[in-house]
Length: 291
Image (cartoon, rainbow, N blue to C red; front, side, top):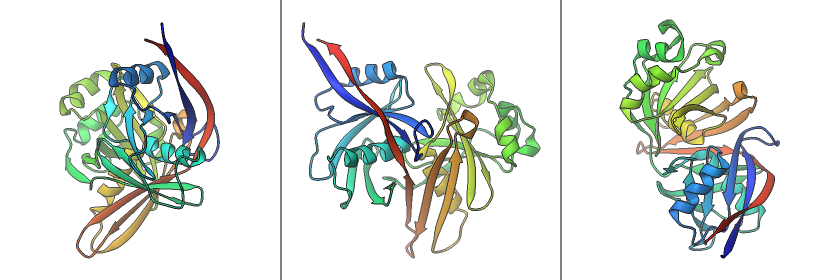
């Protein structure tokens, strides 16, 4: 019986120090690995996401597949930032040139600024009405309607989220979704991601909840949600502009994360959304399989 092995590395993303931010596994040489093998590995590692990098299609251009323990995603932020940092650290990519990660959502362009990797979303923000209203959002989170600042909305730059603005950090810390009310009010929308946030101007605090393998889970840093939120906030700004928000997430989980967002709108009304962050390598290993 033949035994194959694949190297993977572990990173903490949206943090400059180990054991904070969002953990990520990346297989930098996954060419030839089939879908079922990738999904099985992601389930085995049981991290929020695992990335599989294919052979480069051109200089500084790599196909990537992103899996949660239960499904493949078209796009995710912390895997994009973490993979970019890793490819440079391994000498597989040149940080002085633009890096392209070919995801299911489209090409994600990455650039480096000091110790930060910034990616530009492959899709513009799309905003829609949420199936949640203040009263159902409050019930879902164990809060009162007065603690919900405005009517929830759905926003997406490739992966949709219910966005719910809360009135304070204290409210954010106490919010706890009900699994039964989630099934009643969130699941029918087929958008199984809820992003809670508090807006103090340029500083945002956030938490993200989603479903995974039949249960609710919290994520310590969610770049795809950050891009959706930044794009949503920018739609409420007028005219040409360049706006920045720093999002702190994961505090309640003991894994503080810093996500940097930038939105620029030109005179043609075209919006560009960038998400940036640090990442650190914290370990490596090999995954064995038999065939």
